Image 1: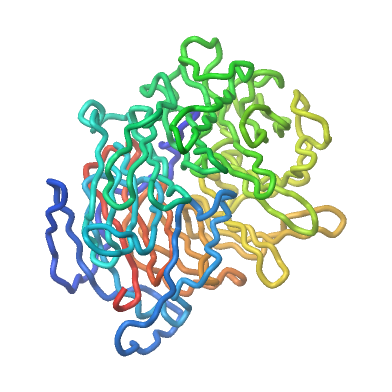
Image 2: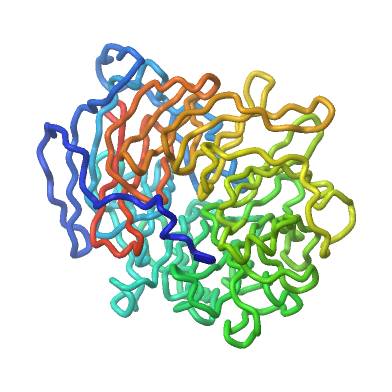
Length: 523
């Protein structure tokens, strides 16, 4: 398959909970004409950490926001503040299960202290595959508001979906969310009401039946950054686009096309002779800190080093007006022919000892270490030169990588955490001589995109339906929390809670799924 790779052999099992005793009252909540149920229970999971005694009353827990996929614009996957959950707390976590009408085959985001429903509360935001965006109170599991695209009935139940994680505007008043009809919506975080002014909602594809909004949304300066790819089965025609939208007005300010890059607006896919080269990684666009340059990776498609940029890592100017540099593997033509997308994941940024580095995975079972100052081995501009990477090293188990790595600096070392269908591994970055990745530890547990929060590593094993919590430096399993099988989802952790959507299928057209909230008592 090319472009969107939903059938990658790692999709979840049917949406059933792992069998366990649930001690709580199941509450049915009427919200916006639909119902969402939740139940709370003490978590029963395997552990090597000893539970700490339950504190009297509610322990003070620091609040925080998780505004976008992998926390920040560079997609580090690291929450930099205290979460309130330490190793000793893992044994006393409780679990709240929220039953969703639809599947959030992505990640949630969260804001604390939103004035909604008549009081200040924390709110989780997630978008289902058919474009419903939901605001949920994590302290109760109640749906506070729900937004549904007006045309949802025309594609609900079909293969036309979105897997894009929404993003909170830096002003915290608005949320941006995608829908399968090719639009980006600007919603009020307090109410879910949609803004209709200027260019909002903003159309980012002229053919949403062929071009999918799959990668997470991002924000850079005054712009919302959106990427597009293709659907399962790689039904041409489609092209990968980077679309820049002015957050204030909703007007598109720039479009960069991975095929036909000399065209500077949205193209109707059939109007250009080449197809594919999707930008479909879960991370979407990665923003380099400081410079604001944009990094994306493309999937299978033609490459000529001039206008067509299939199977390449691309560095764009902050406005997406120019392609500055590219890394294209020596075997690009083979990757294209064998459906071995480089762009199944996006670059993970690594800064160490003055080097600007990136780690790029792919469906070739390799991790490629790149020098952002000389992507193809030279300091020249973009062109047809192939190769130039610093190192190639096997991914965990040599499996295809569809996930977003997490990059964590600790104790004078930089760790890169990668999970795939064959295992989870930590790599350290050494710079003696020239930068190299060295395996620090590895196991055989599958995982989606890892995150590091509060000094703990969280990896969702979507095949076994477990959320595994590790010591990030040594790889010891500290706790394995029961969840349900899934697909592309990954956790977020802050404010004494772990938030994990689950579910998903090859076609992503399931009608229901479960959201798991693991929380400290009283949270």
